[in-house]
Image (cartoon, rainbow, N blue to C red):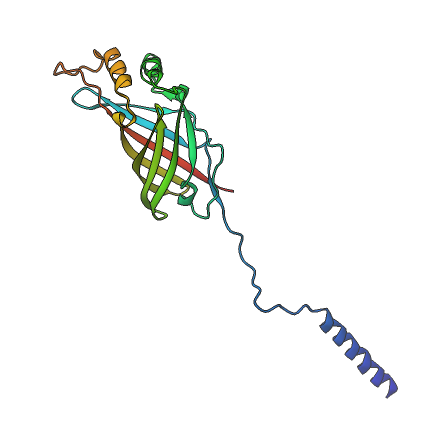
Length: 211
């Protein structure tokens, strides 16, 4: 009988000890998933352009091969990584797959401007969602800052940005006349008229990565 009572006491103590080791859950505290942060990756992003010549509006396409972002902004959404983002584009990275054309444009168009080495911009007001919308780009060149409304669409981790700029919004009359004169024959169409369009289409791709 004594052995039986001793066994009951040992079992009771063991059970009580195990109960004390259990950590009770604290009310009101729940585990949450880490918040994602997105930033634009300048090394993977790109800026393309389309200029036009002849009265038939023949397109001439190219790109800038370098894009600099000193302070990429963190955002909880992909599109939010664009808002407030500032960037710089070296004019020396202008590329159209034609060395003669590239040298002319660098020297006889950009070279006529003030502050000829860098184009800069900041994305400001955004209206839209995680699929599409509009964004205002403040683009600075020839020491003139001008706002351009652009469209954006999101495909996976890419923000595709497109819009048109008009050269005269940046007081580029002198630069325009310089390049038009240099390319007068090349910009002459079948109708015998030489035309260099003052409109340029911009197509950018901002690749967003998770930080």
